[in-house]
Image: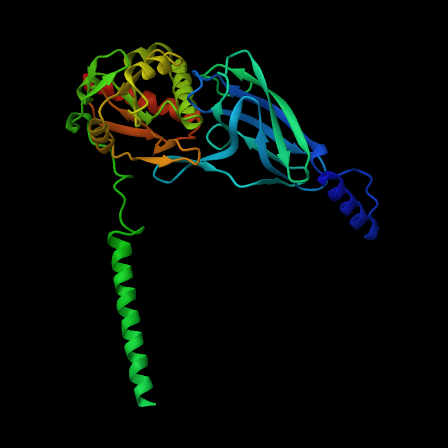
Length: 155
Length: 208
């Protein structure tokens, strides 16, 4: 519904400006690469997911939230380390990705924080994670679960 | 006219006083106050704390003297920074090969409420076998953090739980327990491993 409206408004705008771009802009052009998670110990500790989100389209896209059957409260969080070497973590704001740009969710920075796990995260298994965008679009990626000591998607 | 001028001076004087008080507060107690963190950690021999390792042994700073040591703080309910640090350290230890066996490596939790001896035992079991997990009473953890001039803070989360902010640097000591250097979080591995070798070499120098 919202996708339809946004796309319609955009098409109207582009048409009136004389730019007849046929491509539908927005989350259809989002490509997710290199998704991975570490295995969890049980279900009490939160998990994390990492990936690169690429906007291959020609309009900005904004990631506004996450859903997954794996966790009741999945959120984008950001770890930061200050000048004194102290690390902290806080929910991140909405993430806007410019056309042709990508955002990396990686250890020690932005990550999908998976709170209130519904099942343990077992090495060798995978789970679906859905990214929600401000144009109403969704992108679902299957995230492989690697070992607890994994350092990247290829470990 | 004259009265207004006096009032004006009065207001300016009061403003200046408030400003002076604010500057004083800022420098002494406020955000401008010198932070205790950022100082060099004490020598291990000058530290005083008593904890329990993941196998139930009593440990303290004296446990680390005699071999080069690598020490860092964290907690096992940490989803991002801590497993990354433990993975990084495991990688460095793998790179060091046999030399890693000459080191003591201690992971001290800042969340003893959840990180019991059993929890630490299970957690460190997934990483390099040289890594020991230390936990204990709140006061002892606080004494350890103070000795390393590190810091930690419990922060409530919106889901009703809590997370811990903490110093994520890795501290390196020589075999005599003297602080050598630290490896900051995010430091590339090509810098980390030579730093660890430096701590190992200082041991050799001390021995000759």
